[in-house]
Image 1 (tube, one colour):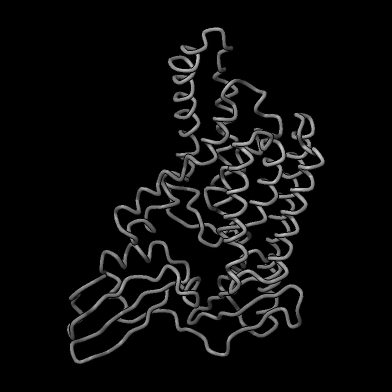
Image 2: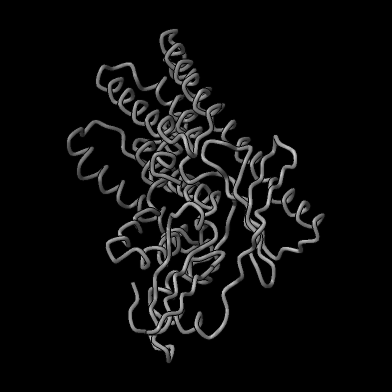
Length: 364
């Protein structure tokens, strides 16, 4: 998920009452909710190095055990040498609650990341397998609206904070309303109505006191959990629909659509081919498949191109790898892609050129 969703999750946990556990509780929750994304630095090593490394070491079980200890140590050091040095009379932060809160918020990060179709390697570094929840789009405006709305009501009393929230919601609205190709019209209308409702709630003073803020944050977190659980059932329905058509899929993906929990992009793999299409809960038929299938990559040309370092990195991440092969007088050009993103043109794979003897000439 995007950093905003992770930050809002940690902040909502704090607003739900956990910030009262100890000084620096809110800092622990927000820092831990974002900590695994330190692996974003891998993008400086190149795109395909990043896809091979991200959502692995810093997100897996070993990291989940170590991050709370690291964050608690950092916060205790800050508490001793900075916060209480400035305010000697301040109550000290307590290690136990900081450790527990860091562990809780940290767990929300890989859970949210797992919920989209990009995937996550839960078992790293012991096992590099990817796991996919296929429940949330990687940027979900309903998380922004639900959790952000609660935080807005509780923290927008000052002029500076209100200005910051106005800037955020203006930017969020631009993202939602400008993407007409991906965000359906009803979702855009509903998002605007949600913003109007938040403005009215603030004007009425809802969520302005601590107890109301806690109740609202708990309700928002519960609504988010129900929303996530409600989106995970599509994969079983798609598998049943495929079986009814005589397609015995080994793996099925129903990638969530932007701002639309009632639709998703489908990829199903058999032993020899990929089927792709669209799933819509509210239409008949619910499953619409494209007429053409895509063969799964195999053969000497593909295997030769797959030896290129960038191809190896890409294939270590690809869920439904595919390849387009062009033959010319000099040899072959192999363009790697992943069926998850092929039709949208996002996250295209490397291009490898082979000579007539299947030796690698160039790889981008």
